[in-house]
Image 1 (cartoon, rainbow, N blue to C red):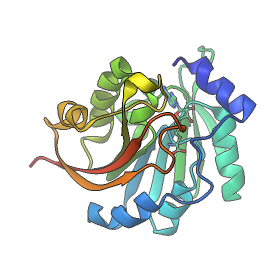
Image 2 (cartoon, protein in one colour):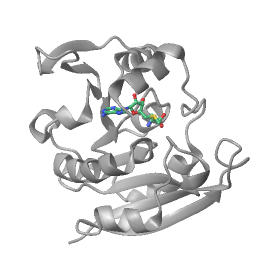
Image 3 (cartoon, rainbow, N blue to C red):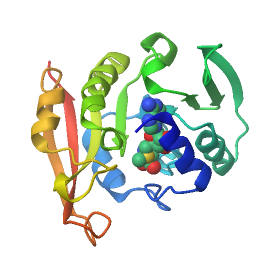
Length: 218
Ligand SMILES: C[S@@+](CC[C@H](N)C(=O)[O-])C[C@H]1O[C@@H](n2cnc3c(N)ncnc32)[C@H](O)[C@@H]1O
């Protein structure tokens, strides 16, 4: 999945991953994060309505999203006009930009170009359809990058599990073993909820959606 894959998904409006409602797995399980207030980092955020919900709970949001079209739509749908500045990679095809308004800062561009200095302090992480959007080799790098960007802040992670031989992805299947392998040096992963995906994964194979609390090791 290169950048072009995702840009063309957004250009064509092929965004089946975008939910038209706030994710009930978020609202049901967020209280387990046990942290009121602060900044939530939402990697690969798209234009998720979950951001509006988190803002409504009093959190500040920092996000990262490749597609400027998605980021523009996110702010349009929130009804706020952001200030936009280039913050890195000025000469690149897609420079890293910061879009900000009251309580919300979104970096447009490749998350791997984002640094902890640019991102600033983060209290919590919400990964829905971010890790599962990436192929296995990239997920290894992603998990390390997320940990170093956020100082291993507590994380709510939502993954799909299904028979990967039945469908190429994305979304990819990220099984419990991989969650442990990727994060056990930094977190104690705890499974909070497991639900069958209605109709299976794109109708091709049964699938389960799992919600993990990644609690930092002390
Ligand atoms: C499956 S979608 C999930 C979006 C959002 N989390 C949601 O729940 O609706 C994955 C998103 O990641 C973005 N993306 C893919 N690769 C990226 C990268 N390297 N850096 C930043 N965003 C990326 C895509 O443009 C897409 O919007």
